[in-house]
Length: 115
Length: 115
Image 1 (cartoon, rainbow over the protein chains, first blue to last red):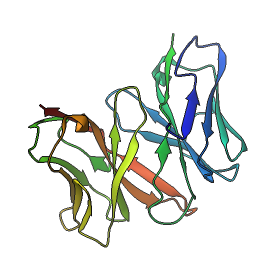
Image 2: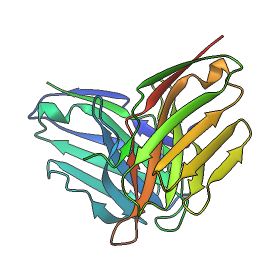
Image 3: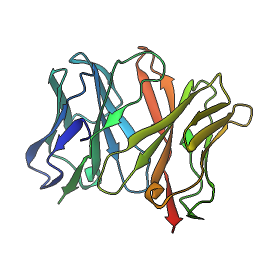
């Protein structure tokens, strides 16, 4: 088991819909992350949370709204998305936010398609 | 502009031989480098890392070499096994101004180990 679980695995939505992606980590980690991977592009960091507090917003449009109700759960709320937002969205966690060599553990991702 | 580059999108190697995956970076402030492995429909899994103060780190069949003057690192897998067939991502770690870790990823190299 990966230790980081993402649901749903696949999501198709229209541009006017509102949906949420969910991430849950069972590793007792304190930091959680959202990444976006578009076709033929590297993973791009979107948001960083530490102990439920947002630490970084990597210039992400406001149509993406993260929420971290506790250190085990992370959501990404989506509304009025654009076709270019179609991508694989990956959640990750690490033991701590700072300090050297904190490998991030990834979920299997949600494949999002915007019609 | 990409700070971490993997210029070979694919690599094929015979079983039992050595696989060498390469990665170049541009930012001299990176302090840790990591390799992740990704199977289809799964998230990346952490494989091995190296601190910028070292030039080699070995873990079983996997060895990572770092050449800071050339801003180049490589992952050696020996002997290669069919189960090693996957996409390998190179990543480099730098700190945000907040001190939070920020990972920059390459676009990946697809390794195929031929039985």
